[in-house]
Image 1 (tube, rainbow, N blue to C red):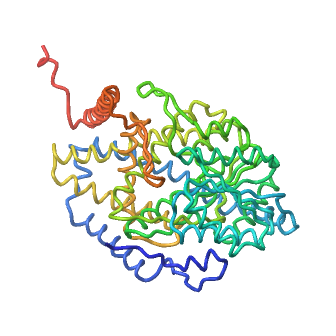
Image 2: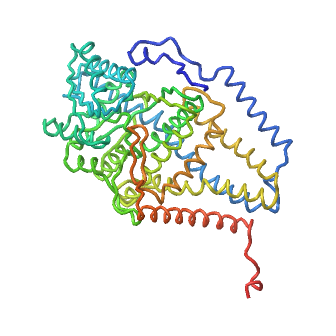
Image 3: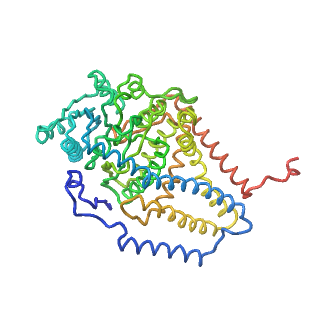
Length: 525
């Protein structure tokens, strides 16, 4: 198997040492690949049959053109907002926050809330090393609250802290969960915090057991809360350390580039669309409330087909929804970095699909109730972003539907013109994404299209199956997979609903583009 090995010396990076290994972004190989790609696109346009402007198929071209203009215009809005945030608004925020830190302000107390479940020893030690480095550098009294499900993780962390952190103002509090699930682990930790009576303005860091903090992250995050009393939560930038197939590394790197654009755009509205579980920071006054804790432990939704069901994963989305209901100001911090460690075995296709199913399900479950809050509560731009996610999963399927139909019903060469258009348009998007990535990947146009198509298909599948959840990253947990007669009938109904929705989309598109037409009325009577 072609396995990706990180190009940078991450162990030196997280320890605070300066690494001499600095990969060049636009190296000669990348430039040559880009030139070759563009040349092939130009030659394809010049030499291959161009069926886009076929008069018989002009309505298809107009339909795809209108959808393309709409989607790319909306995407451009995000890019422009992200550029303004990155180069204008955030530098002013950063300058004021840095002054607060230089003037000597420090939080009264820091709390790290970390959940972990049988992570690799090397990963856990790297995570704890990064926390200890931040505590030592900042000098802030800190409590590490560990929500664990196994003595294996506890032993690794206790051994490391006894050996390397005795001199630090760092206290370890371990809470062994007695009920399975990450949500219950977080709930038990928060209840323990509440009983201890931590100060309402203390800062609580939510982080996962595979999230490695980059140097200076507390210095970059903490003073933001002192500078802005209205700020209630922040989330950070992410980069991936992937051990697995190269294409998975490329895909994850692309997703984080997309995330940077979206997060910075959303932050212009003082909100974000998720408070990622890898690392987010909150004021304690929200997280120690009984209402919040109970919601996180037993968050649920009512669905007309599946009844009332609990959420298995998506604790970060539940936290985000709660903060929305509190009119909380949220912010993305682009220069505060967390490294996500991914260990992927096999080809990665199943892992990719499972991730999409989990992410899409969480988005749909929480997006539904976020929309019900209304644009006045959420803010119009963020509210429309949530709405757009639900629209985009259908519009993304239109172009492959008409391309396949036009190829089968009219001209077998139409699919060639369609793929040329995909190659050109996705490279145009990739050129923007390269600005938000530390590396250039020539395969991004193809991964981007596959990512969009698979994401849309998975969302459509999940829409009628919101109760079905699976989390392979945490003990292969699942819910909504009952085998009773009632469950089987519900599954049949869900399949029927999905089939009707997809059939309605296909028929609407085909008749609208005149690839199919209704028989003349005289044949009906």
